Length: 112
Picture 1 (tube, rainbow, N blue to C red):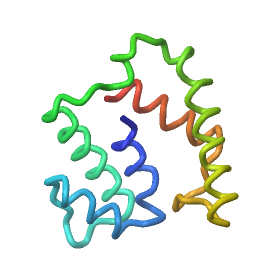
Picture 2: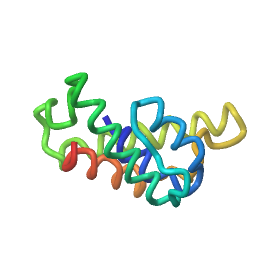
Picture 3: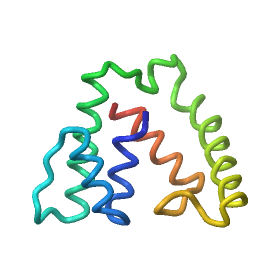
Picture 4: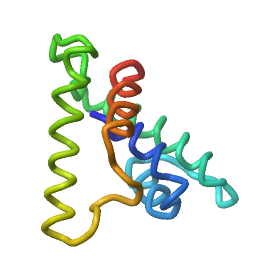
């Protein structure tokens, strides 16, 4: 549900991986695309893919953003902390904290 925004956010850190995912989802990324451009293309491609599959969005849960944010942010940060403890490192190409989760969820809620 936050895939489009997640791809956009992580593209500067891992542009080749985001490009690969974008192309796997049916998008086209120009060879000379900068990481920020790759992120935007990836975001648009993932939104289109989710729409074609008629996947639910966050609003389909009939909760307001204000109701949803504390639940999601808390659980995601706990999961990341657990992964760091188990793996010895974060399972993400960027630091994940409450602010990042809040940004992703807010964008996904408003954009998807």
